[in-house]
Image 1 (cartoon, rainbow, N blue to C red):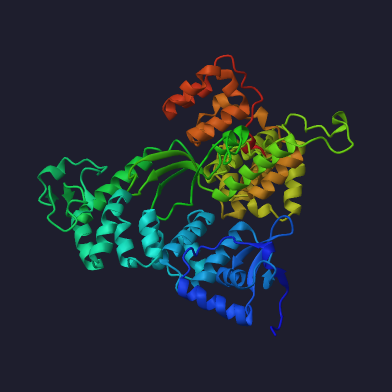
Image 2: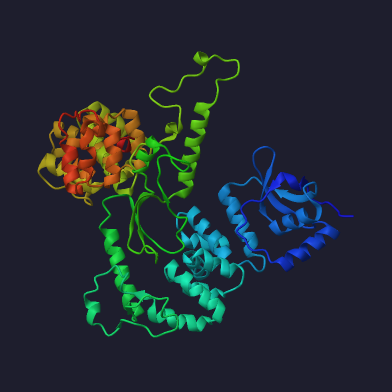
Length: 555
């Protein structure tokens, strides 16, 4: 009789889940099924709870399949139950399969690409999580450019890993032409490598300027290698030069897009799950309001394709945080379902809680509506806070004195810079102070008129504000109730707009009401170059700039 050391769940309450393994060897499955028929399942499977008191399989699908075949849905399956997110379940499923034998590299590739996507493209971290070397990860990810038929052939062991790695360097239509020849004629990896190295660099599809290629000795109009009918003629046989020119052109295209969005990234083979097209409607849409806000997100941008099938193409409106995108989509769908739900049972519609003032009872309540806080925007913002506080402190000696005392009592006198203080003294006394000679400074300060000494004391507060760490600066702003609208206006802040990308300026236009003021001219204005766009935003006819402050500048 089987001993039970773990809790059990009826097999029918468990549904297959996130297994990256798609191919199950029939002979091995027959052995596992027969063993389970006689001995039951000895090692528990890993599952996670989902809705309706059901569970999703995370690891152990061969045992799950064997038990289902041997004993059916009423079998008491030994389990380990864990609360897991989708991302955590994906990782555990892959790691569990990698640690077991005979998982196809193509299956590893698909799962690894998902994990790279979850980690926002950080391949080094993905390799660490998987316990792989970076080289192993990159080789697996390279398989993501294989056509479905090539992946299937690798899964079912019709071709070797080496064949697939070589085919992955070609466009998918070329792969599908070569695959039947490789299988039927049993071409070796070495033979395939020789052909591809000689003919993979097609000049017809090259994205760089080919003027120099016309007379180059490495330009072959026809390769007399095997599979010559399957590979286009007119190729470069100097792969290093071809690759270098291609990479330079990709970088040029990406550089030309730098003003458009916070992120401009060349996407490579294996980056399949690191980006998603930002959509408004449909099953994968985030909603209109959220889509507008996403344009200022630090993970929003443009992808330049480095993939064989679309080399050099530009894909705009990309979200490079797929997890966040999925969360926003789910929030929007849930909000729409809730909005369509019938009135609370026994409660008249008029008695239902009202939506928050100024918002929709939808996923819009979760919208992020401010510009992303890049380092350059943070530096601009803190400089604005310091400048505004210095002005107000200098205009009110009593306030300046109390702030100076508070700063000293908090042990922050060290933040008063001698160089900055010296500049203040030089303006007041028309003389230079010494940052090392105390005796000289005692004499020079004593000789100052009383009113200038008072001004110099105020200068201490100004110097302290200049030197405060940002967190202490923010505390002072909040205590002072600093009204930045008295110190900042968009019309006089061209330097601020120059820090933003065009997509971020769209969010700014929405936030401040400029989109509405531009009306039908909005799209026309945003099709201009960045310098022209900035000038247009600073001079919107009929728009009242007074009191309009972007949220990103607030403390």
